[in-house]
Amino acid sequence: MLDKIGIAKRIAQEVKDRYYVNLGIGIPTLVANYVNKDIEVEFQSENGILGMGAFPFDQDVDADVINAGKQTITTLPGASFFDSATSFSMIRGKHVDLTILGAMEVSDNGDIANWKIPGKMVKGMGGAMDLVASAENIIVAMMHTNKVGESKLLKKCSLPLTGLNCVKKIVTNLAVLDVTSLGFQLIERAPGVSIETIKEATAGRLIVKGEIPEMKIS
Amino acid sequence: MINKKLLNAQEALVGIKSKMTIMLGGFGLCGIPENSISELVKLGVKNLTCISNNAGVDDFGLGLLLKDKQIDKMISSYVGENNEFERQMLSGELKVDLIPQGSLAERCRAAKAGIPAFFTPAGYGTEVGEGKESREFNGKMHLMESAFKADFSIVKAWKGDEAGNLIFKGTARNFNPNMCGAAKITIAEVEELYPAGELDPNEIHVSGIFVQRIFEGKNYEKRIEQRTITNR
Image: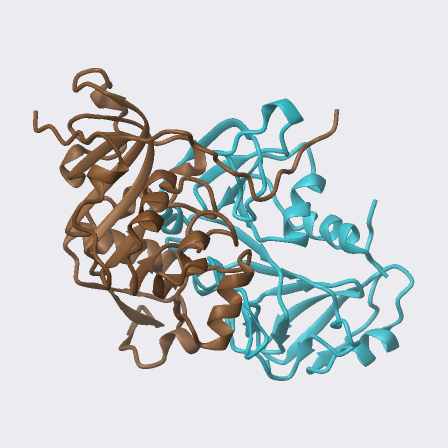
């Protein structure tokens, strides 16, 4: 089974040379730390920066340079700042190649819910609705089950939706799955996790075809 | 040169009254008009509708207006960091219109640009789309979103000049440029205000035509919500 860092490391393998990538809050933010150093990648944050670098050293912290998670960050050579409308032109206009975000629920047709639990919790959708409505390549990073052990990979989302039919790939603590027209297709198992365990933790349609390899994580 | 310079927030905010709709720039606490928000607290104007991506935190930014119950309605995209906001919203004391962040930015830009409405795929098939006109373009469904209408727009910039030209710093830019010119009157507070001619016209982010009033703010706190560092 993977921890959050393991999930981030596995997703980092999906980041390819010359990609512009938008990272959501939480596990997705960690992905930047594990991307192959030999490829050229730029990270975008929707509050208005492209070419985001690591967290600053203590004396370099600048309140005017943050990411969408409100964390202090730095810029890399080639970085740029822009306004919010321009930022979403990059997203809506499909100039960003890959979007990685978290979710509360994903359904087996690729619907995603991640912004509201009616009557209990409302964080707001932030940029997530724009991202999932326009991005062509969307990877969800999340735990396979919620805090009380219920599956987050469902036949149909029970929470208010963020977007329809948009998630392409899911990386959880248990597995890598592609979203296909027939449901969640199991691609890889996390180290030491059995197909049986994944089946039990998946409420939506699960397709298991042939040998399912274990993930390779350094 | 048309001079828009005023002395302080008190002078710049003249005319703001209860029940008005006000746009405020900023992302989290980054790039918020701190001096003007303090002045709004002092003025005690009530029943405001505020258009702003976030609502500050419990004890800073727009959170100060929420605490004093000066806001009737918030139009925002993300409220995650503000407990009082979440409490007032869930209890029904505060009306909240949560909308996708890109649509929020574009509704500001549309108001500024004289575009009454536009279509975007964001939110189609979700609660956000309920009651809105939808239309298919290139095989994909889109929602019609309308330009905002606001009485005042209050923004924060790094440098400005008497003509109202603005330059922003880092990600403190965010919604601020899109809100300039998006309301009947735009008020800009800046960290450094220069005489006209001192700023290089090549470096201006927002032209002075979109700004009606400008003043130099003071005592910026620039609070950081998530101080994250790399250890040496």
